[in-house]
Image 1 (tube, helix red, strand yellow):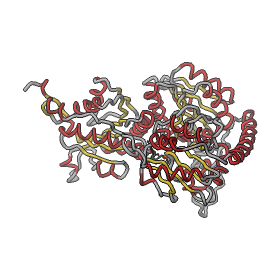
Image 2 (spheres, rainbow, N blue to C red):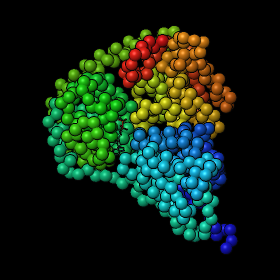
Image 3 (spheres, rainbow, N blue to C red):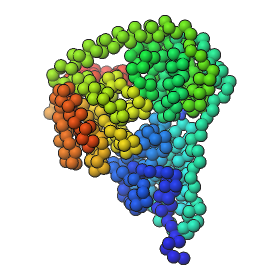
Image 4 (cartoon, rainbow, N blue to C red):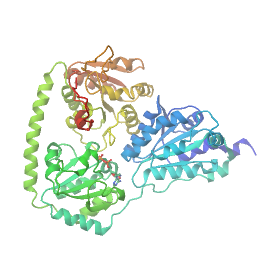
Length: 563
Ligand code: ADP
């Protein structure tokens, strides 16, 4: 047998990924996967090499959300694997499809704990953080393992899947024909899930009797890519809706039926609530009074049956994919009657809130030193000029205030801290957004949040990605004016001139002290189409501890003075 009639585990992994239309791998090379990255690149798959696996895994997760196909993350064994796990777990929590493939050490040494290079039973560790975890023991099972991982990640409720491939399997040589026959392409990885007709009738009947109906759109609705069905249903029924942060843009934020600016009234008063790809988790106060009307009846559209009743009784569960369910509802729903007064009530509250906010924005516009809202107004105005821009957003105050200030008008153009409210997704998400969509990306980052993935600025510059990072820099976690009882900096204090960092990697850095500067530099950076960073110098006293979720801090004996 000649060499040309042989293949090995590394080739089979790359061939299987190619066969399944994988275009990009996000990862960090090292033992035992470096050759796999090289081979992938030589075979036409793009390899985006990161500085830290957690950022590569976050990128794969964002790629999954943005494309609807599992993003792929490649890591080395034990420490690299563990770093990636943060992104894998976060993807699973957010219901984003991704596959983390990690090389691992020799089974016969690891399992007897004889002390191998980077020894760890990675499969056992991964299981509790992933939707599923699999290990391939023979090169002939690589195709099967990859097919299984891709289908599991994408089907039903999407999530993160771990695939463990020991170094020995990657090096295993086998007959090339046998290898080729062992690979297959997954057919229809995320089939439609049509709702049961009786469940549709139940939901329609409940909605028909509502005096104050409300629709809540979550990121599952954005992920489902059923934009037309969702819009048509909302506009046909005339029911007011609330978008969760990553559902913003499914309908433009200035849509007349949006109740976003009357949120608390909408929750308190709604009598029938239709949840579409949104969970009644902490982000929605678990559906509990006093945030919600205690007599509200819930209808829930979700692909995962087990989500029903997780927090409140679901009077009308609709198990299926958002597109199929909305189509079925639409076929039977008529414009809602008697909701004119309800809409008027929300409109009046909304006008009041918008006027209040306009006053705050006006004050912030001229404040010196600059306030969060001053910088954000400038960012909002620039982004409004180009709706194609993908917005990444994380931080505490930077997240809360940007979410309410920056309107979105296109679906899936905002990706943020998500279900965990996690910090550290910034550069990973921004890189994936640029790579997967080719659109310009603006990452609006709190200074603390940015630090978790800041070294990936080098990755942004190395791949020359059109990412502009805007750091809202108030010199601290929450705020930067806390005094310390000894010579050390206060636990919340940070100090960095971020615009200087990017210069080391060949990108352009700007420092902005006024809203006018912010707008000017952001436009300049976007026009160049090149990697850039705008460091916005924000008043260190601006900011609230823990943003708008300060109530989650334990209320023990320690008094929290904030500064
Ligand atoms: P948000 O944080 O925006 O409220 P969540 O992440 O809490 O959104 O909820 C998303 C929900 O959407 C999850 O329960 C998930 O099972 C569901 N989901 C994901 N994809 C689909 C789909 N294609 N069709 C229906 N439901 C989906």
